[in-house]
Image 1: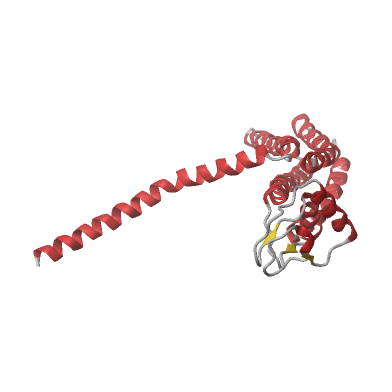
Image 2: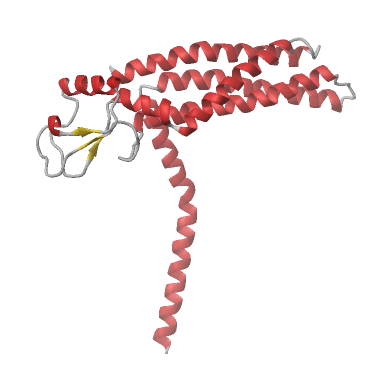
Length: 250
């Protein structure tokens, strides 16, 4: 009886300690996972694009916060805030949200292109090894290849970048450019982001019409700087993305 009681208490204490240990190590595991992801992104060819995207989308978040704090101080001091300032702030709130979406999309697209894994069911030109084939890629079959994908695959084979050995029923990754094509053309989240991007450009145009409406230097300056960052992101971000693609396929 005493042995059973001691064993039960021991198991209870052990389970409690395991649970506490798991809970206490969650922050460390999350930090390690985040560090690994950041390291992978920094080592990827899209590090330049990510730097441009974050460098031009984070400042508007700071400008919005500064303007909000400034208007709160004005209100607390008994000052009046006109409708122009309210309209400018509403524009900046929405723009800050769009900038956050830009940052998340840049991270998602970069990670998807650099480290994306796709199943054989995707309509993406994956190549499947035929049953029992242990020879070269010349005996493999393709699925719904476009002319461009065929050209890319042939070029990659000539450069020796495809594996020359396959196992039954396994799949090997598409070429890098085909990976880009799949992400930009077939990924549903990227399709949504393209629509958001159109709205982003329209919202920038709306912001140009609101420049100077507030009449308060701090808010007007923040709005103008945010618009400058927005147009700079459209220009420099596009060029940085093209440069990252060139580095990817080099």
